[in-house]
Length: 493
Image (cartoon, rainbow, N blue to C red; front, side, top):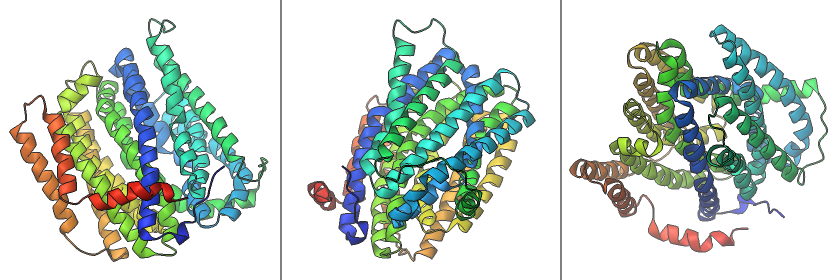
């Protein structure tokens, strides 16, 4: 039986304990499952089918993702925000919303197929795209279920559903790739079919769990309800579209405009995979922060700012360590995963540098979204799209995957700085340089270590150890606060 947390009654310290205790659970579950799915299954598929075949899949996957918000129109974020604030009202809408999503699926499918035809895809790519379109519907439907769990603050259930499809992929994909039942030559379409099965199973399980806590839904089309929902949620939808365009369009542009596009997209995918894995963990932060920010912004800004500081120190401090580990050991890390890495090192390094501004977006972008400042976020994202497409058009024909990675790094940096500065202005965040200086001190210490021991076989281990010491030594993580968190987190019901 689930217990709904009364977050309005929690103090700043208790709020942080709720956040971090659930964060630990989410991170542990995702650490156990998602890296295995990405590097054990997904990367093995790329090694087996080759960069060209996987590059085509990667391009089509990005194409299916670009406008998947047509499946959602911001409904998920709208549901999480409003369910956190008014659980009894929003949970009655499930049946009507799901019926509306079926209509949106038709619109999304027609639009994406039309875009694919416009870009020159035909034959087998369109066949593969049809399953990827179905997969996006399943993924966004799972996300819709999870928006209810997050809004109700059923964080443990949300954590379970968040990894279920990847867990199933490990089981089914492992049998397909590594047992006596494995085919002698695998095909990329088989991988897509397995993903479809895993997503569909996860959706069924999530729906069964949610039905215990909402009124029994009936599929019913209500045009006026659908239009009213679009009016309320379209700013969220626009934000998602704009953000996806400047984060996912690289793979499509690579495959379409470079002379050796499929290969370059495959090379880019090699570097992007680890960034994608880290992005998932950043999304855990955002997923937990969003409903808490949404509720606390109505009651206590001081609690929100304390949580912003604590989560930013933890996420960005860890991000700095990750960047130094991956950038200075790029060849070694990629060599653990792939067979041919010659052309992937440079793109990988620039993509990993972009993880710091992505980490900033997880904190400050989430805060602005929860506060309803979608106009400014959409404006920032629109600038990001223009910058990203412009840089890609210039660099991709010449530098291929490296050019796309540089475009991603630059775009993420511009949008992160803009979001941070607006948060400082909007919420009167104290203009103290101490936090920036601490992160700069962490980066300086790791840089000196990395240059000094650049060719050492123990560099990764030493970077992690020294980085962890510096994080605590610079008080990016308060040891006493962490001790209190561990001792008292299980007291929060």
